[in-house]
Length: 270
Image 1: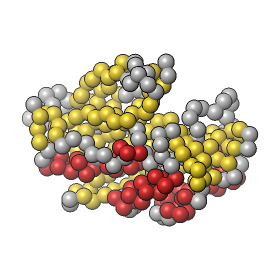
Image 2: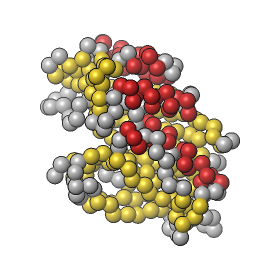
Image 3: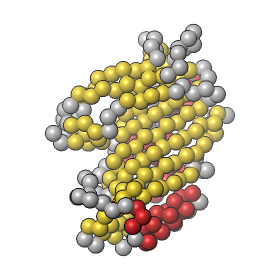
């Protein structure tokens, strides 16, 4: 049985844009694939790299768009079709929705590769948005590789990411079980479990899948959800037959709160 959105659920078509925008936001990355062999510890990283990461965070926290973009090459691209112009547009839209969004980037490892530096980072983002009188809380964690040359990032690859948007006095506590990577054509388990018992209350929920692509950053979820008779969604999915990245989203809504989680699933060659 399908149920039209009401209450918290009426916010969903608008809310869905925020997590998608994160995928085009301030994430430092690198070319497709991991750097070869041993990487060095963050403590031994060049001073210029540490300074650049700190200044990008500072500019992002101040919503200084040009301060961020000065560290991105004019030829910047990522593996999903995002370029420097797209990054600028989506950062602008994201900061309009979450004007107090904060960033914290931690360097995990680095390696010299020719004239470039390959660095792995974890970026954490947090912020609130008031929408239709309700406060929405956004949290996201993105692990990525960055390829830096002459203090400019010219290509990126996101290795893993998860964003969560919650609202209400008691948003459902959700445990999401989804692999970060599967092979093309492979079946995989997807479980999104609400930890609190259902009791006598209603729980609406749904799972949605979209390819990671710039044209999907602002796309909304469907306007209806399932009435759940169990505390979660349990599915067996099948990866596309060609390598690509997917966004898998699970949303749960009840009278006292909402929880929307989006995770990236990498589909790689067999």
